[in-house]
Amino acid sequence: MRPSPVDALVAAGLGRPGAAPDPEALARWRLPALGRAVRHAARAPFYRERLGALPADFPRSLAEFQALPFTTPADLTGGHARFLAVSQDDVARMVTLSTSGTTGAPKRVAFTAADVEDIRRFFHVGIATLVEPGDTVLILMPGERPDSIGDLLCRTLPRLSARGLLGDPTGDPGNLRRDLETHRPDVLVAAPSQIRRALDDAAVCAAARDTLRNVLLSAEALPEGWKELLADRFGAVVFDHYGATEMGYGGGVECEAFAGYHLRETELFFEVVDMATGSPLPDGQAGEVVFTTLTARGMPFVRYRTGDAARWLPGPCPCGSGLRRLGPILGRIVRGEHGPKLVNPAKGAANRP
Image 1 (cartoon, helix red, strand yellow):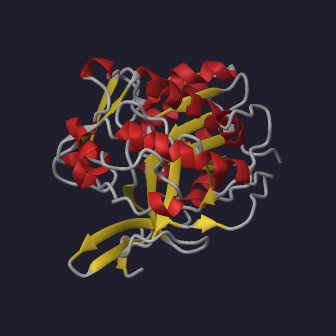
Image 2 (image 1 turned 30 degrees about the horizontal axis):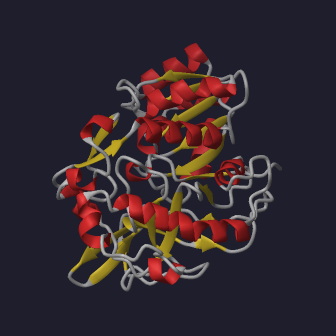
Image 3 (image 1 turned 120 degrees about the horizontal axis):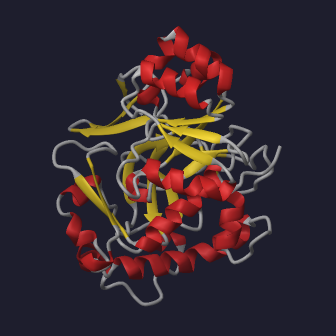
């Protein structure tokens, strides 16, 4: 079993391309990287108000950084322009969305051309886990607009000597069966909701078993047992990806060991915090996933609450990587008058954490 290809991305970010990334070297690198990220974020009006008075040598410790206030999706919904750290002329892609646990007014996230290239680099590394040279990849993610997920994947796959084809994003079983039979893809990329109806369609399942080797799921939390059901009916190996538009789409992806997400550690700093108090949690304890962008130029985020629940997995990965891994998403965190509740995607029921 080979180590996760994401390790190579992290090693390159540490200035040691070709070497195995060292967790201790990453920890030493992280503190000044957080300082640079905070100083860049302070160029945006929202963070200038919050972070402009910080000392030049901030942060002197990880605990000092983790004392900063959280950013919430509601902050972004309240005015995306206040999060811009560059001029409008430098924005290459603006995404409007109402996902990541919010309702009501949509959020808007901006990317520069350099941000888009970072996304493509991670897509290249992440999808290398399951794509081989010569593969055809059927992509159900929207791809009509430039720099949308489907478009970025189609433009990135040639770097792996593979090709991408855009399928029907509505998840119509008949269209999916037609594409499977016509193009005979080796890999399918989709959100769970896009292929949910296909799981009960015998003709689609037969077509999938006849051609697919791997499936990459993204964009949505997986109900318990769903991966196993899909693998059985499609006859393919199923990988899961974790990300959000605010992260720059990609956050982490499973390796061949299927033992948690390997993360973009030199481009994003992740925390798992107590759902109620916000205190950082040790390995094994479930809490809310929080992230800080380390390299985003257009719209940086500092300690952004995702509303996703997960836990850090202890020990090294069976694939050989020594870097930390995030466990599967356990559900969404909903906050009400009685405090936070964890909504389990497998049952749709709210339970106290």
